[in-house]
Length: 116
Image 1 (tube, rainbow, N blue to C red):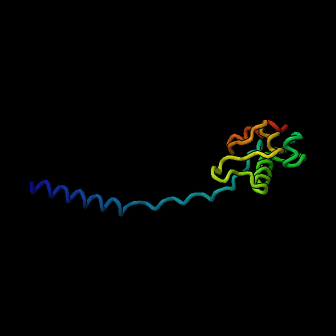
Image 2: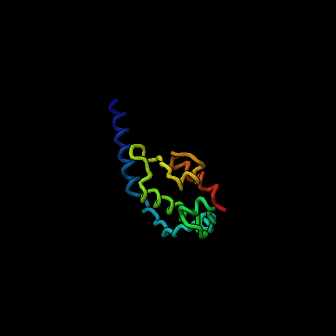
């Protein structure tokens, strides 16, 4: 048994020697700025119902979503208890196909139907 202990200590010593011989890590190349997807940046024309909320001029989908959220926040339409739900007013009911309450995830799906 004494011989086995000696082998273990020899192995530990060998491991220490290996770690000291490691090469330094290579430096990563500088990150490039991510380019936006062209499909999201293409100007889309909102129909009359959505145009009443975000404006009728052609703007990208990302801007439509931002303006929609500005409208929701400004008018206090986000549900107080369940924050992911949006309570629709008269203008938004036309966009949300007559629904009074819509989740924020369902909102984007419904809004996409009102863009050309």
